[in-house]
Image (tube, rainbow, N blue to C red; front, side):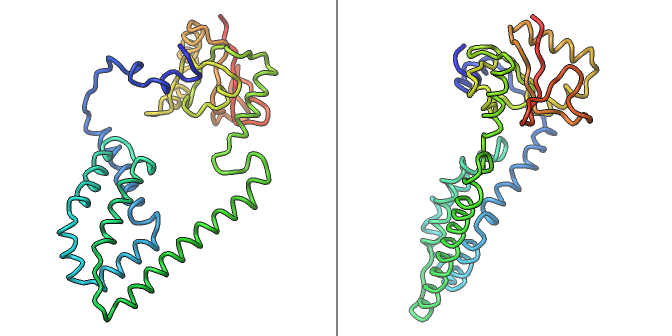
Length: 264
């Protein structure tokens, strides 16, 4: 079993043999999240682009609708591909290519009469200017306010760097096996400390929440199962049990993580 998180290295191997079952209520819960997310991506992610396209479409009038009929394959393919993700998951990086093709087709359909071409050019320039200013503003804010301070940039893994160092000081050695109660795919501390995740209770479907709500006897049974995988310790995001970490757990200094040794 190679790598920090084997299920992420080869999902097809670890999921082989799973039996899939359709359940209406969970499927509706998924749709309740994916539908608004795709609407946000299309209409709210770049409102200036939506406003500019609307203005150009109004200026083009019936010519725009006629051109859309010629470009309908591109539009249909983009919408269909985005629809395929609705029952599964919404992730902007999965859908970015489809959104790009869709908006390019909608913009390519614009046909302006001579008397409104100047107005159309102004709209196009205004959209470009607003998008360029937004990109420049974000870049400057990231460069000036975040990157100068370690651990404060976007998607920073600084806390994982600290966690890896603290785990080494607590006796964890490269190659040691560990268990996780949370999200193993985001356990960068394990990679940095060269640890191997061999057991996990996932956050997905409220798995970790169910664990913390379970009686202590059930939790101890889980620890015993973790130990039988030869995991030396279990790490989690510190649960909301005031004050401090729950019984038997120790918070890793300078991080939001808690660790518990496992008895072999």
